Length: 263
Picture 1 (spheres, rainbow, N blue to C red):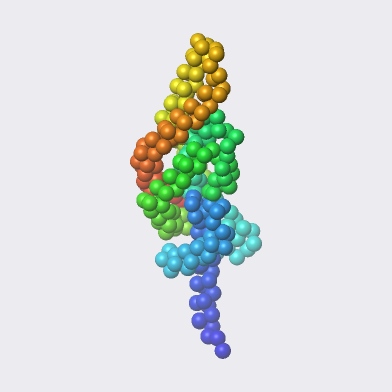
Picture 2 (picture 1 turned 90 degrees about the vertical axis):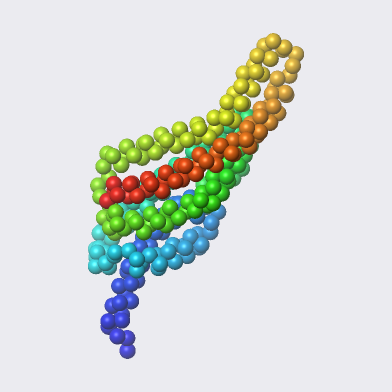
């Protein structure tokens, strides 16, 4: 016969794991790289379960804090989803900036119709955007950027208790808007060398078309723009690496402040 104390202990631990999984699961599904569409859902679920099992004894949780009513449980899940989505949003801003920069340069090069599948977001991007996106992913993994999320998971329970997301204030909205603005600033910084080279090529081709109309600019200009764009996109990789490292390190300092502000 099963001991009542052992049964209560088992149920308590199961509830604690479920409380952790409600927050950890959305974070893992929304985080870059591990949360991309290329990763099978079964692997994400297994990783979320394993992470929850590891974190459950480490975080200060009490199964008695879990709401007992369906409405309260629904609000609890919604609050945890919002908290996870806000943290993941700021990290995705960085990768979205890389994709935006590559898309703009690709259109300037005349490769707007040449798209490849992005393994992270599942949409079409330009080849230049794909090159920079893969470089950003490799840099993110090389500096253990994914550990930022795992550290944020553990520390988040010190900022915000289970279902204890505070009122989303005006400062939170302003922080999101500021993050979106910084995304475009970062995109301009990434694409500046290649974009300026292709722009100067367009200006030069325009001057030549006016001064020497016999030259077929459409035939000459497109290969030249593609060659210049690819050359400067490759040369900008040395400039991209320290820029992305600085942004990922900044995220490591930013996520605790965001979480503390939401608590």
